[in-house]
Length: 257
Image (cartoon, rainbow, N blue to C red):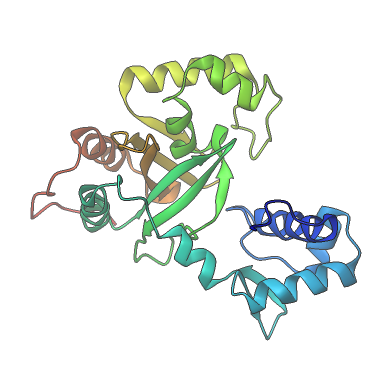
């Protein structure tokens, strides 16, 4: 007979392990055990035991020099296992945009009030974004997150996020429902989502939704650019490329450095 309910002690351990993994969001890709213990209100020995188990299972990896933890290869492997209804065209489009602009191009899906990054084509510049596979970020202040929220009815978004105030990441973060509702309406009208320093100072993002797959899962694709490289003509080119849809990027396109 298959057991469908875990004993209370195992259930608590599972929940705590998942809580630890959720802490590794895009804004904090590296953590120490002390930070985890403080964030979750758990004794340090308990966190140490859980982290050792997660490292052994390759869900976390340990930097031996600094004793810092980051998401491990098992999480990254799971993150790149994209459902079959995400077409090969999406991957090819990611690579084409990456080749055209030499910026991070990311594929994400909605994860409740957050977004989960499933795949990335990183840029080569030293001044880059370096999105981490398997990381999460708040949906209300990222281009790809707002894009995914815009695919839902307003009432569904309101039920999931509430009226606010939402987490403040910068002074430009949208924190209340009336402003977010207006932003989502603009995204639905234009087909394009933009976030300029709403999630992180010095970072801009542009995103569009992909056609919904047969399984009903909604994905979106984004281009992340440091604002130091975001000249008006470059921003216009990225917007045009995203709105044009997935097709081969013409050769000979000049890239501003």
